[in-house]
Image (cartoon, rainbow over all chains, first blue to last red):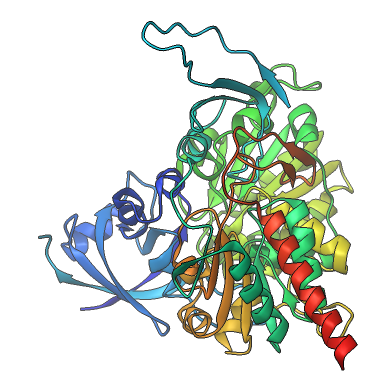
Amino acid sequence: MAETFILIPGRTSKQGVTLNEGKYTDGYLEEINTLQISPEDMSRLQFENGDNIRMWNDFGEVVVPCKTSKGDELPPGILFISYGDKSSRLMAGETHGTGMPDSKGMDVQIEKVSAPA
Amino acid sequence: MSTVAPPPQESSDSTEVPELKVVTDATCTFCGCVCDDMELTVQDNKITKAKNACVLGKAWFLNHHIEDRPDATIEGQPASYEQAIERAADILSNAIYPITYGLSDTTCEAQRVAVAISDWIGGCVDTTTSVCHGPSGIAFQEVGEVTCTLGEIKNRADYIVFWGGNPAESHPRHFTRYSLMPKGQFLPNGRKDRTAVLVDVRKTKSARAADIFLQVKPRSDFELAWAMRAIAKGVEIDPSIEEQTGISLERLTEVVEGMKAAKFGVILFGMGLTMTRGKHLNSEAILSLARDLNKYTRWTAKPMRGHGNVTGADNVVTWQTGFPFGVHLGRGYPRFNPGEWTSSDLLARGEADAALIIASDPMSNFSQPARDHLEKIDSVVLDPKLSETAKTATVAFTTSTYGINTTGTVYRMDDVPIPLRPAFDSPYRSDYEILKAIEKRIREKQLNGNLSS
């Protein structure tokens, strides 16, 4: 059953490094396409690293593998993904008169669609 | 440019010695820190060492070699430079509502020409600032900016608040070169003389570097900053602020009292504020807090900027038009209205009919409706590397890389201009050269059209 979370896309050093290696490299694509979930939520939802997660809101939908976030970096209820193609597909076109779409702190729903291959 | 001669190379089987050059005081343009103390070792048109660079800077320098791509393509097919200039000038001259976008990863000199083109064709000029610290730009107009340089922070700041950012990952040398660690004129013991606070939703790597970590609830930054303003002024705050923001009144009061007792404070704020609900109001709250604290001691606030010359883009567009981004030039004079003339909106609403995109990849990071429209319209794209935006461009130019192949000027995140010292030549033209050629051809078409009519 789908649950609502708050998604925070952001920069990581791995994203910055692999960006320079190339936007079409495995390293970059893996970094921007992996959803991080808190250990508490992973355990509660019985997700495993590599499970494919459908994540959607009113503006878009993506399917990405998940992994457990490190230590206590993420509190329960918060998701993190490196800023990029996938996170941007969940942004609205509307900017509320600012020029800036809501790009962080977006409400999203998630559910597991398949176990890791 | 400062270069030193390499040591003599010995070769037993050839008289040809590979060219080896060391470029000192080179500038890294990967992020807004714009560190200008790089020592680059260059061999065979490749940077093999980047001394003093951080992990991001090393990746920037060591992965930029000359790629084998055509100078230009038209509709995906290789084309001559001249053909591409002609087609680009046609597209931009004939457009009714064109936009110019990107500009944060190129030189100020190229930015200036891009603004001129936008003016000649009566289009909108916008930069990646609009999806970065654009909301802070709006807040500057509302509140003003109590500003400082990174040098002042290094030499004076004994209380530093990082808010809504993760410099440990996004600006790795910020802590060591500019803010937390360095010994300064009035801080002889460096880190020991400073208090550092991190305010963020996530307990990131940067939290380890801070003395105090305030884990704010998502979308509560405005409430937290506003409460801090009130506490600083002695206004009574309800303890329910903890329920709203995740930070207890006692803890918050302790931090604010520490801020008031500082000799020189700075709030360095990131896109955790500008990209989240509240946007410019979040930045306004931070700028207001810094302004208010000047009643008690010296406080400043600076946005942490991402791209190497996004600050230059703000400066150039402002000195050319009077506004930093989202500028409409279609009536012969500049008008500013974020939400109306910002690229994300112009594309998502399906209004722009052509685009000139310099060193940016909106096809990978704009909203889906904006991407869908950009794909439909004619676009002219300048980029050193292949991108989704370059792939869908009507005309795409391969460019040299600023700071590595091209000289010029960039602005550090604290609005300090820094010269670039390129490491090696590129067979590809610079953004400046290409934009100048497009501008010249557009003017020729416009003047000939006027003469013949």
